[in-house]
Length: 296
Image 1 (cartoon, rainbow, N blue to C red):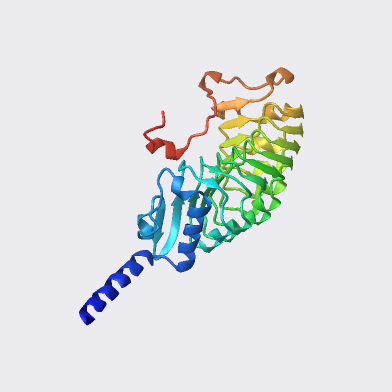
Image 2 (cartoon, rainbow, N blue to C red):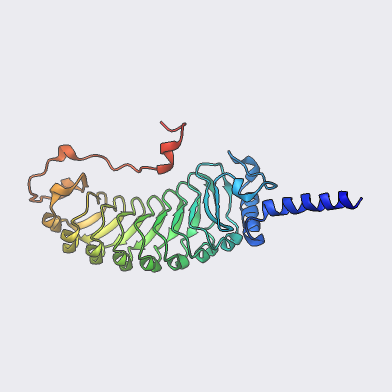
């Protein structure tokens, strides 16, 4: 009898250890995510009775969840506030799903987050001002959602950011001057919103910028003279806005461009000779698609 009880205790202990590779708080946050996004209908569902480090898209290191990658996995519903308990998370990729509701303020408590990908969902509401607290963030992609309101001024605090794409939303107002502080930025996409006002002259400080896509907005005023400082720029798309002068584009070395799109019919500019045969259409590339057998 004692031997049977002892074996039962060992089995129970083993089972607890199997699921206890992360804290109770982190386990509950994952469970809440599963339940609030219709986990049973995911393409690759989780077995909540199995060890967390065996769950699809979840990586565990030193007893903490450090990555969740559920790209194109049929998540539907809203994100739970308990995600804040995943304080060691570095990568959160929920792109190409059917997520709805607002982006919870709780995400800003994931202070170690480096990559946040939520593009191609149905999020709405304003982008939280508290996003500026994610000072380790290197990539933030949130295009093709229904975000409204203005771009948070606090995003200028994301000094390590290399990629920022907020294209194809319902964002309005002026582009914050604070974005000019993001001196590590390599790609900035604000395409297809209803942004107004002029391009901040502070953008001239973005010397690492390779891709700047501002097309299809309501931007006006002049192109800043500081654009001539953007020596790394390869893709520039500013067409379909309301600029009253493109004269300052002449100061740019147009031979550096792979893609250079502006409203040519409205401008008589004297550019240096450019071989436009080298130009191409700027299309988004999704790293996840490279390994996707269903992707053409």
